[in-house]
Amino acid sequence: MIYGFAAATVAGFLLTTIPNWTGRMPLQGWPLATLVALWVIGRIAVLLSTWIGTPWAAVADLSFPVTFLAVVAREILTGRNWRNLPMLGALALLLLGNLFVHLDAMGLADTAELGNRIGIGTLLTLIALVGGRIVPSFTRNWLAKNRPDITSPAPTGKLDLVALVVTGLGLAVWVFAPDAGVAHWAELAAGTAVSLRLSRWRGARTFREPLLLILHIGYGWLAAGLLLLGLNGFYSLLPPTTALHALTVGAVGTMTLAVMTRASLGHTGRTLSAGPGTKAIYVLVTLSAVLRLLVPLVGAETMLTLSLAGASWCAAFGLFVVLYGGPLARPRAVGDGGAI
Image 1 (spheres, rainbow, N blue to C red):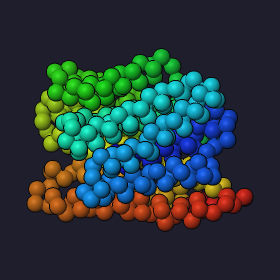
Image 2: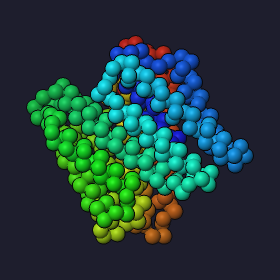
Image 3: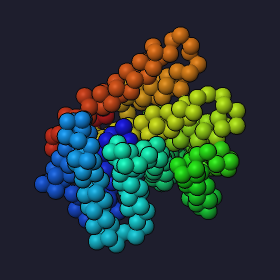
Image 4: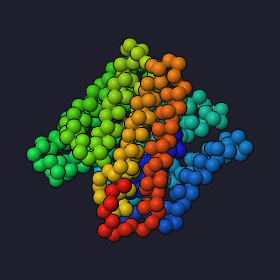
């Protein structure tokens, strides 16, 4: 889920966004097909690792993040896009975390848990960083067009920078020293910082457009998960995995679908507005996250709730494939303004 599914979403986002950052042509043709093939080979190798051996599975699986890191480094450095150099650090951390998981699988080191935390922490940092750019920006643009009577989100300033640093430090402590005495204070501080940033972006004014509202909800899951992580360290209200699912099923899952649907509508020439099917996707992924958090509280209905959470998750992504797979596989329809 981390280094197969989530790493692919990071790659898709960066391949779509980097041309806007650098002014260079997007990766296409055989180079892009090669990247996709490497990702697919990695998935097959992990699936068949019992037969081909864990070292060969590791080599096959790591070939994608190594190659993708090189591709992104070339684009950013050639385009002199220094502002986004931190993306190379994030990709390097994803590669390192994936390597740690494979070293554990090969019996060379006890590093799988650390590797997984590195991956999750990096994904959440990217949500904090990139979400902190796009959520207020998209909200500002939409409000200016549709609700000019509403005050725009607060402009990015020193408070946002401080909040981002606090969030990054909190996640770093959770990744590398989750049992340290300061860890829960750092997690609470990170959750508070994310909540403060979110409160300044006028999310309550976006209910008319679910395509925008879902971005606020996804960022809200990041705040909720970090706060749960910190509070649970003091009071043990819920199993430790509950906060983890708020961060993964909630924040990562929701932001993935929020960005994929918006980007897909734009790149297929459709109106940037959520149609009935897209709204159903958002309801399903939100329901999945809520149900997953309720699992420890439902007693005898644990397996039923867990199954419903999984089914909702699969339905959300399955519906995305059904609704968006066709339009994405065809050439852009010029003048097609329909929402999905």
